[in-house]
Length: 208
Image (cartoon, rainbow, N blue to C red; front, side):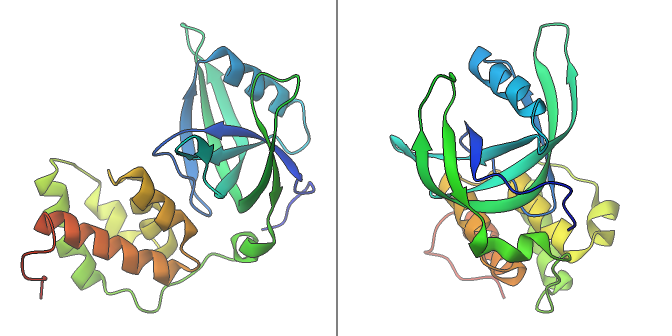
């Protein structure tokens, strides 16, 4: 990924449980709280237009989040802002700053996630003939729908990262998916989470 701006060492933080931004994906957001509307306005004034998505963890924040660049926004009739964030890089949160702004700012480092700025990842270990039957059963069990043609034709990274973002896993599971070092690691964890959900626990036989 070629950037036209330097990665900022300080980011406005948007803590949101259950919302993770995987590498090379986009995340739609509806922003309506005054402090985060201010955050968006301030971000749009910068060259990088970046916001740090991060999940709360108890009374604190998770140590790893994702920096996303605002690539589209529109205002609704009710004053809400509809925003599209494009992933730039995951980051490690080093410190949280509270200042005059009504929102938090984070001191962040990107060095652990250099592959996020490189070419799309592939997963040589993926077996779609195993993954898709699991996914079909999971979707039926949870009464979810998807565009199967698009899913089957998607590249490895888009498929795995999109599933990791949209499937209704717990916040902790989504954080574990975000922190997976490689696409293969993320896919293995994703399959394990789907299997576990299908079994309703670990007392039944594993799928063959």
